[in-house]
Length: 427
Image (tube, rainbow, N blue to C red):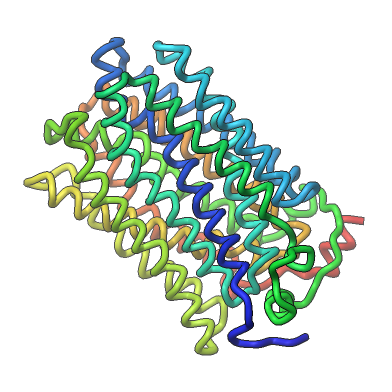
């Protein structure tokens, strides 16, 4: 097939921008509550274990949804899968305005979690459809950075809305933007060959990887593969760290440094700006090494190792002498997480045929959510009994080195799945 290094046409990057926007919106919607948590906790008398239960059940629904959406997207494709996901999570986002207790929020957020669990399976399926292997990690790094933009936008927008119009308005206004995105997605998204705006050169470039016939694949066949276990154990170990940052960072800044609703913006913006840089840099680093002829094994794992080292100093964040030292340590850890994730998220597309990627991503998301559930309970227990984030940050500091060690031990050569063997198992 033709393989132009600079094909005429850039529609794939518009698709990437749409995915980026959806990831931004998903993070805004899930973070509204965490930004409002200190003030709602004071107003409604929430306990730390009660808030941990909100996070726990969100993770539970998110994990189950990941499994369901992984299979669903394999069947219906990225376009319909993403539209369904956004529709479901928007309903859950609006439902939060009807409750005030921790139990009420835990129930209302179930559809939010179910819908948002479809974000990355659909996004990665679209990336596999629109980007060849050599650009895929960069594309994933770009739209993965959307989570950090969402995390930047939320502490700027949500406190302003809540202070001016009440906390419920923060949910209504942020949720309304989802509807605008949904219309744009349904109107624009097509497969590369079906899109009226793609050029012949761009389609040839996108399809320069060898095409693979689509076949259904049972989970029993996937669980027999070392590549599956490398991916899901890696996600189990690193995802809880990111969920902890998302759910508890405003509380940490409030508890440790007395930051209030009006003051969350600058420290959270700084943290997620660093995370944004890490997301793109992590994807760029491995893509750059691939472009220079390094193996996928070396490129991905060297990039992940560098990112893992960035997270180590966060173990000392609780002891930081000032707010901005803590922000720097946490920001570096978030940068490390996002760069690490950009590469681990590329593994399903690197090693599995397209027709199995949604299922693998679903299994990884479920594993990550299971780890997040344990982290939620652990954080709630530690904060209620010890009253310090030190034990929590200690795990965050070593999680990525541990994940990479396990990841490398299980699949030391980063060997792709045998398509023929997988096809036989699927038969």
